[in-house]
Amino acid sequence: MLYDGLTVLQHRGQDAAGIMTAHKGRLHLRKDNGLVRDVFKQNHMLSLLGHMGIGHCRYPTAGSSSSCESQPFYTNSPYGLALAHNGNLTNSHELASDLKNSNFRHVNTDSDSEMLLNILADELLKQNSHPLNVDQIFDAVAQLYKRCRGGYSVVCLINGHGILAFRDPFGIRPLVFGSRKSVY
Image (tube, rainbow, N blue to C red; front, side, top):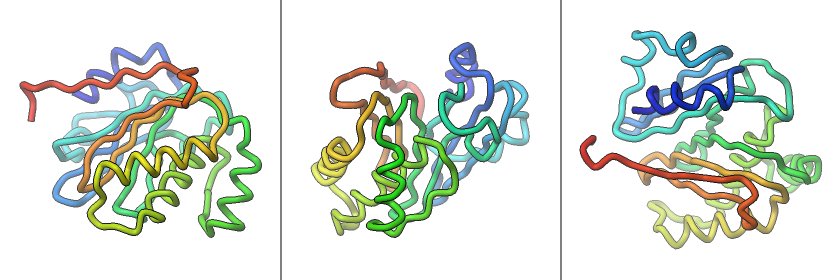
């Protein structure tokens, strides 16, 4: 289902593609530069196990076009967290400094997506709970809204919890979230 969705959205981003899935507490990732059909061969699809996942087609607006900036991005702490996003942060330099100096989080790229991932991870850690409840997840997003300026739409996989989708408070970037009841 993720592959099919990315194929339909290929026109929105042709530089890179990626899928992250979760299965029995483990995350499975495949991402690279190129078109969806070139990034995902049969052997790659067979290794993307799980009952939930997120995907992304990339058209770079910030950062470089190297494969290390293809999405989804992930971090192991907390919970195992993967994020894909579309948009731009207007305060990315300030956020990068805060992440490094105040939150002690390491960011590997100049990608806004990786910054959003680490800010969400930091806000989820502040909830100091395992497992999280839905109110704590929504509180973490509310705190992210206070820190991040710009237009963005985000999908996030929280291992052991589910899929989260949100957009900037002003709705600058559109977001549609769907599921199939006929598919497990």
